[in-house]
Length: 265
Image 1 (tube, rainbow, N blue to C red):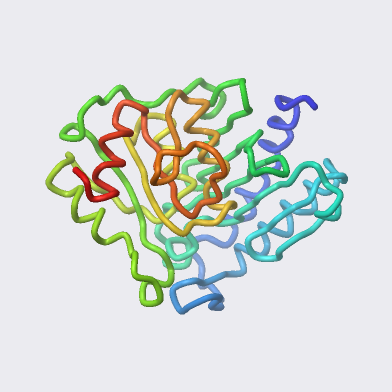
Image 2: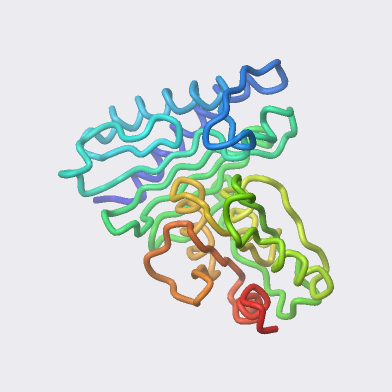
């Protein structure tokens, strides 16, 4: 399997999806709620996912497709060796409020959730971040790498909060507050896929979040790693990442971030 060829195909598909999403941006939206009043879907999400799913199925008929909005498509999950995880709009709340910070995320992974190809697009800026396992990461075709920031006091880090804060004890508030006096800045932009891409290209020095889904983070995980960074769960393990716990950094800050997140700084 030629991952670079697949990367090129996925890049073409995501650029088409970006054009589709922008047809709906800046206009009145029809919203529906999903798991909670905070978890919404718009006509833009559905239109982009239909387009992406159809294009992927045509290009890779033996792959299974996992979409955030439509569930499983394509080849049967029981027999497929490869799986696409797609988020047609990561940052729907921003999109619905016409805030220009959201992304489209596509990741190809094997049956064990090891990401192989990643493409993330910011449709507003038309930036496309992509990576293939063993082949590095790029932004609009140019190589990217993580930052060289070596101390938290000089770092800009980023995080977010789950959609269901009232039903779980761990809401991420404690680590967020703990980072505030230790770093140059803490940001919360609202699109995990794009925030991970920013770690990959050095705009952010670190990112952490809990209770994400594979379609939110698999592409970003590969982008950070292929750009020279490190991604683990809160225990420091680099394997079996599903999105339940994600810590991404330039590598130099990783242990210090883990200590803060786990309350041992």
